Amino acid sequence: MIKDYENAKVVKLEQNYRSTKNILNAANSVIKNNTERHEKSLWTRNDTGNKIISYKASDEQDEGRFIVNTIKAAVENGAKYSDYAVLYRMNSQSQSLERAFLHAKVPYKIIGGRKFFEYREIRDMMAYLNIISNSSDNNRLKRIINIPKRGIGDRTISQIEEIGIQNNTSMFEVMENARQYDVLSKSAEKIGNFVKIINDMKEMLDDGEKISDMYERLIKLTGYEPFIRMASDKGENAVENVHELTTNIIQYEKEAGADASIQGFLEYTALLTDIDSYAEQEDAVVMMTVHSAKGLEFENVFLPGMEDNIFPGFQAVMADGDMQEERRLAYVAITRAKKNLWLIHSDSRMLFGHSTRNRPSRFLSELPEEIIENKQRERIRNPDPDIPEPKAMRRADIASSKVITSSFSNKPVMINYTVGMKVMHNTFGEGVIISVRPMASDCMLEIAFDSVGTKKLMGKIARLTVLD
Image (tube, rainbow, N blue to C red):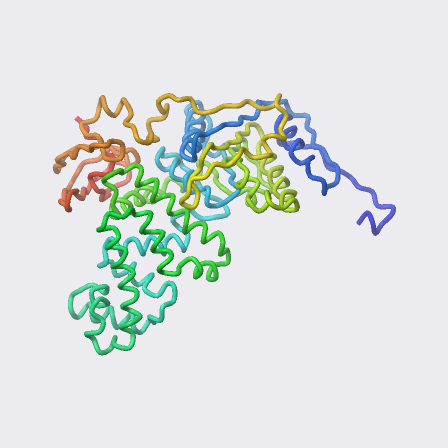
């Protein structure tokens, strides 16, 4: 416009009514490094405010613990959960953060997106894992029998289901014997290819292969990655989610140790997804991507993943033009905070199933030292008992519990659970066991919890404490 109209006058709207001086100073210090911009510097009559906290986490779990502990401490002193927002650069970052909130029973809601286990691609892959664990699950079988497309149409699926009903057997068993049924003869080879994938995955697990290795093999054999890349409007994000599920599996394997099983993993994910009612509360922590946060403001903001290759992203690190946009996004993210801002980077991070070590974000080095307070994890016992520490039992658990669960002990002790026994669960609270059903080396417990009703949990991984 300036080039087209010689007499045009530029009016800069530089006064900010939202943020503290320190927060604006941080934003100005980052954006001034962009060369392709009109000169502009925000100012405010607000107070100087608190220093910005730069927290160095040991990994993504420590990152989640720090955020949860900070929020819970403030809430105990009168703050509201809704005073806090967590803004992240990539949707895939939300999975480890959701896990931290769920473990600690902190209500949260995701704006401008869905919870991790609600994505179509995650529901598809979880259906595959359920069929590998329990081939008699007809509903989940019908979901993925022709996903990706393998030439098994609706008519064939209906015929398989009808034969199963007539013979009082599962659809999968019918598929294993497809050549015995004339109506399925034309599709028998295609059906057999699907059956082989499932049985090969079962065999991998029977041979002692890790669930995470089996899952990566499953992705390749099914051809799901190229399928979802083409089928989804956000193909690359969907592919990232598919591989991020590997991170969830590996995390479970670390916690369960030698007792890790596919059935146990499915129970583990049920614990993470079965208390979504918390997020329905109005007083909840807000989670969203930085892109979705444009135009919004929050009292207190956490920016996790402040590392090169995350924020700024990998593509931006390789191309200066993209770096200009990443820096603008960082400017937006910083200025969403009104009073307090936390910038968090990790020594290591598991993302898409692989551990990586990234340098702290270059944006952190652009901030003035005088407005930053640096912190890192102290090597002490976790101050929040709601969030489990990896690989070690908390002292309070050892002192008060009758059972050391498999999640935190190299040599788990299996309790002889009985009907009527009172137990405590980290997520669901107190409850009473109303039925016990032995299952191989474990048992299925049906527990009536005071706060969330009846739940079915596997004894070895439920992390129950027996109450006196």
